[in-house]
Image 1 (cartoon, rainbow, N blue to C red):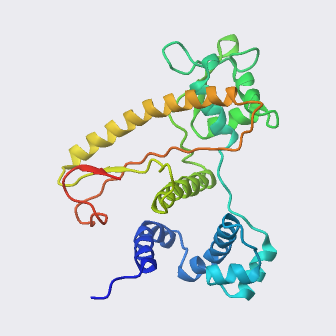
Image 2: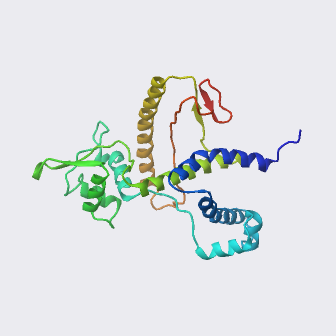
Image 3: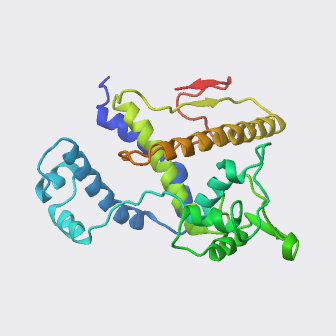
Amino acid sequence: MQSKLKSDEVLEACVASLMPLVRYCLLEGVNYPQFIKSIKPVFAQAAKLELAKRKLKINDSAVSLLSGLHRKDVRELGKGGGHLIAHSGTVASLVFVKWISDPVYVQKNGKPRRLVKTGPAPSFETLAQSVTQDVHPGSILKAMEGQGMLRQEGEGKNERIVLVKESFIPQDDLGEMLAMFAANLHDHMSAATSNLRGGSPPFLEQAVFGAGLSQSSVDELAALTRAQWAECSLVLIKRANQLYDRDKGTPQDYRFRLGHYFYSTYKGEKLAQGESSKPGEQA
C-alpha cells in the first residue's frame, strides 16, 4: 500500500481541526466562497513570514511559488497592506486584571477592594488612570458597568464601586469576544505547530481527556476545572505584573498567553483522533 505524503497527512489533520470553525461560520452566514476568498491574504502573509524567517528575498514570485497563489492575486493582495491583528486586550480588560492583582487594589484575603469613585488610591479613578491616560475613568466605569463587570453601591460618601465578576468575559460585546476568540485560537495553534516543527524547548500544549462518563460527572469535572483555573490564573497574573514592573527600562520584545479550556459532548460525537475512552493525558 502506498504511504501518504507528509503534506497529505498534515492537510488531513488541519482539515479535521477546522470542523468546529466551519460549523460556526455556517451558523453565522459565512459560506464556502466567502471563506475561500478571505483566506487568500492569510496564505500570502504566511508565505511572507516564512520567507523572512528563511532570510530569502520577498517578492510576488517567491510568495506565489511558496503559497500556491496566482501572481496576480499576490500583487493585488499586496496593495491592501493588510495584516493580522494580535489581541492585547481592551482598556476594560486591563483595568480588570490590575484590580484583581495589584496589592493596592486587593485586600489581604486576596479579594478585590470596594473602591471609592474618585480621590487618591485606592480609588477607581486612580486604578483607571494607572492603565491609561487616554480614556476618562468615567467612560471606563460606564463601559465595565454596561458589561456587568461591576456595580455601584451606596450614595454620597458611602458610594463604592464593586467588582462582581471573577473573570473578564465580555458576553455583550461581540466584537471583543471575536477578538479574544481569534487571539486565543491563534496562539494555541502557534504553540501546537511550533511543537510539530520541532521547536525547542517545546511549548506547553497538552490535554486531559476521557469518555464513558455521566452528565453529572462531566459537570463535576467542569466545576473543578473552573476552580483550578481561577486559582492558577490569579497566581500567574500577579507574578506577570511583578515581572512587568521589574522589566521596565529593559528591552520588552516578548509577550505570552496561557490558555485553558474545557469541552464536553454527548457520546454521539466521535472522539478526536488518537483518543481512547479511558481518562488520560495527551501531549
